[in-house]
Image (cartoon, rainbow, N blue to C red):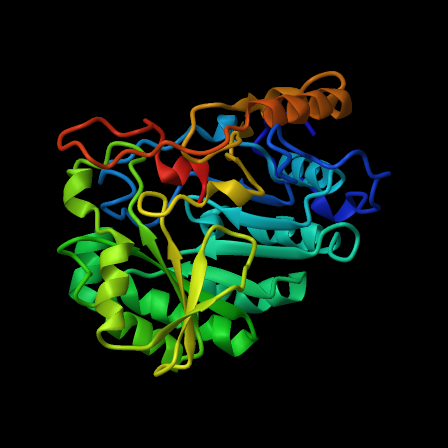
Length: 352
């Protein structure tokens, strides 16, 4: 297959036999890298106001890695000790033939890979839930910031809440463990967060709340959107009994159990409680750009390595460079009105 072509790759014939394991990925701060967030597209069928502008300019398809290249890249990470891969976007399920990639990666489960999962907005999930389970996916993260249809339409600029709820129900019916991710937005959904949590726990779903991150120009004032989760926790503790839980799903969330609902609640707090000390993650965009830190501009071009004359050697060198430049922590700022975004790239480009 021609590198960078738009023709569907034949992932069925890929060799899924694990290669001899090379040295694990360890950064300059002695953090072992075991978790890859792999974006398969920057495209999305929603236009969330905290994520992107209404008229978002998406990448030309020729710049995006083929499914075959995405698999080769993921396999290279597995051979360097990555045990968990989360498929992200944009919205990963809008990519044509994406289930071919899930199926191919699923065959690596038990052969270096321990978990394969995804983050989705669930608009397309009803049609894919059973196939995801068949491929080996057991957990999904679903972005959902409100249960109110009108508010959802204003927030996402699309009237798609019925499709999302159908997708959540289909995931549950298929046996997928669902965790809902809600971005806490000042003056937008802060009044609804307790009801969203109560509903989710009643359905058997965990919830994680996330502080808004200053990535990309979204045509709104970031400081107006920012709601510290320390304030949200104070509000919740006036209603419920929250007990700290040491559980970890491999990501940055810190968890509590809510006695009254019987469910678990996570907090991702890049501003009020930095979580970088134990970072075990790397992010790769759909164009093959490796970002060692979500909040940093440091990057390594893996697409160039994949399309070189010696992909295996070039990829190994690129991963070593990534380990050297991974910063100790991010430096998000959310304290200046009218300031430019911390980084120009949008979250949909980096992958959640």
